[in-house]
Image (cartoon, rainbow, N blue to C red):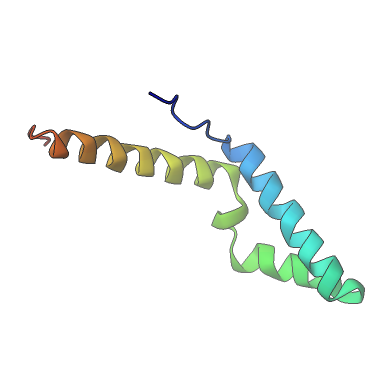
Length: 77
């Protein structure tokens, strides 16, 4: 059987999201990239926050773990 996929930490994922945002903005609107980046960071602070990303990953893992038990016919409260 395959090993479970490796998950990025919230810090690494947040850095990648910011880097990708910056790259897209530099390509689309190089003169206004700073301004649009700041607006996007203010508009969606949780999306770029490492702690928020970690919490979301924990929620998803809990849901996945529970669904495995439910499919196995076990009761989860």
